[in-house]
Length: 379
Image (tube, rainbow, N blue to C red; front, side, top):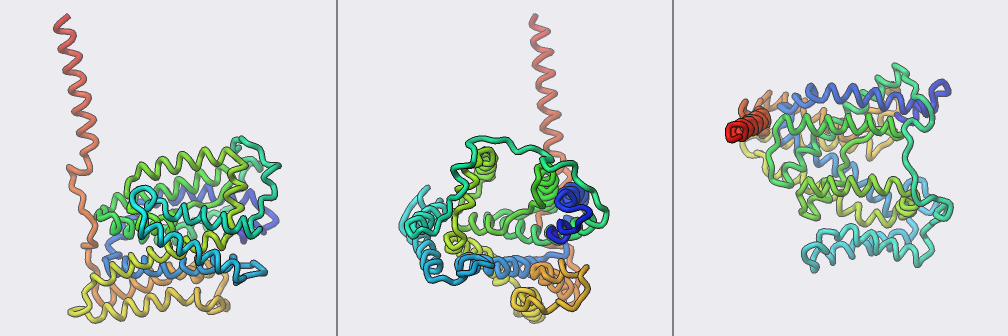
C-alpha cells in the first residue's frame, strides 16, 4: 500500500510521509475503540490469531534462509548451509551455555553467521568508507509532507488491520510472561503503535508496528523486563546517529538472518499452539471446525498469491493479509458456534486499580504539605 501511494506522481514520497503522520494521529485516537473489541477474542480466537501470525512469518524466515525474495541466486547451497549453521549454533548455545551467554544466543548466532559469510566473500560493505561517523536524522528532510485524503484513509485502514494483528501479539506476550492483560494494557500497546507511526512519518520513515519476531525472542531469552526494551531502544537511537553502523547492519546477509528467523518465528507459532491446546474440544466439538477453517483461510494468500487477484483492488490490502483473514474467520465462526461471551480472560480493572496512580500522587502531595507545615511550626 505504501508503494501504491508513492507511485502516484501527484504526491510521491511526500504523500507517504503525510499519510503516515495523519494515520498515526487517527489510529492513536482510535486505540481505545479498537481495544474494546477484546471480548471478541477469547482464548480460542487468540490462539488462532497467534498461530496464523507464526505461520505467516515463518515464510519470511524461509525466504531469508534461501537468500531473500528476488535474489537471483535464491536457494544457493552456500546460503542454505550458512543458515543451517546459524540455526545449529543457536541451538548449541541454548542447550549448553548458561546465564547471559544463553540469553544472547540469537545475537551470537547472527555474529557467527556473519563471520562465515565474510570468510566466503558473501558480505557487501560498499559504502562503509563513504559513510560518516556521526549525523543527526533531520525531521521532514525531504520537504513538507503532502496530506492526500484518499491516501490517509487508505493508510489508516491498513494500520487498523495491523492493530488487529498487534492485539494477538500482545496476548501472546502476556501468555509467554505469565501475565494476564487488561483492556487498558491492550489499548496502551495500540496507542504506542500509533504514536510510533506518527514519529516515523515526521522523521522520514514509514508506519511502525510491534514486531512478531520480538515475541519469539522473549520466548528464547526468557528475559521479561521492560527495562531491557528501554535500554535496547536507547542503544538503537544512538546507533541511528552513526551512519557507519547503519551500513554494517544493512550488510548482514539475509541468509544469515534466516537461521535465527526460523527459531524466533517458530516460537510465535509454538505459543499459538500452546494456547489452542488448552481450549475445550470435548464438550465444544465445534471448536475444531473453528480452528481448522480459520487457519486454512489464513494460509490462503500465503499458499496462493493469485487466489484473490480478480477481486477489486481496494480489497487487496485486506485479502493479502493471512493474519487478518484468519482473525475475521475465527471471530465470526466463534460467534456463530459459541455466541458472544464477555469474559475473555483479560484482567478486569476495578475503579481502585484505575485510580491507583492518582491516589498515590495525592498521598505524596499531602505528605509533602504536612512535612512543610511541620518545618514552619518548628521555626
